[in-house]
Length: 227
Ligand code: ADP
Image (cartoon, rainbow, N blue to C red; front, side):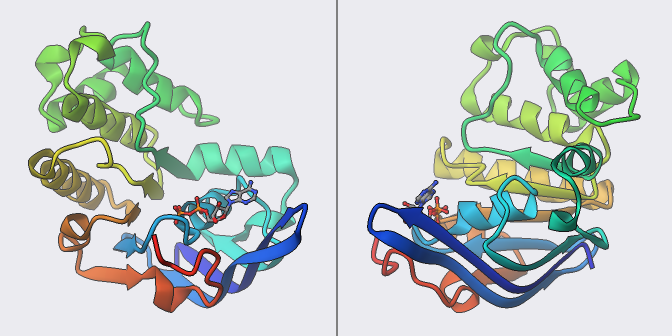
């Protein structure tokens, strides 16, 4: 298993007291498995990804990633563990504007302890996402879909075991959304990397064999699930 969650509880504290956002009795993802989690906004999907990425300590429960208990580690070990094993793709691409496509991909490798940025590997990945000929272009010279394809190459360059993608197509039209998700799925398959995509778009959910309805998975209904 690449992710194994047990008795997960996450409460946020506000002036009005603590309110539960996540209550997940059990959830697993197999090595190289690809899943989409769909559900309304405000229901806790990003919060779950942040926990699996080791960015947000839960209130209780166990979170194992690649066989390691994430929150049994010190924060600095967890940062290194994340750098080595995980990549995160966001809706807003977080490409560095002052760097070319190739440099942005190479930057993905510099966050992985022990990995040496490899220009040839980065070029191969840009080729894989159909952008080798644009390697010297800056993000502002590319369309939104092209920029997201660069982030896919950047996510893969350090050879992660798991990619977490939070609304990766949120800025794209339906045609380009489908294209980017298919590319992401194919590239993860080729690199033996598990993939968890979070989305509120049903068009994205349909691209996956394993679809997880977040309202079934999560017993806490933070926002009533109405949005
Ligand atoms: P989703 O990704 O499904 O849109 P989120 O995980 O972003 O949902 O948020 C789940 C709920 O937790 C929302 O009601 C949100 O307002 C609340 N929330 C998120 N972050 C915080 C925080 N740091 N403090 C308090 N409440 C938060």
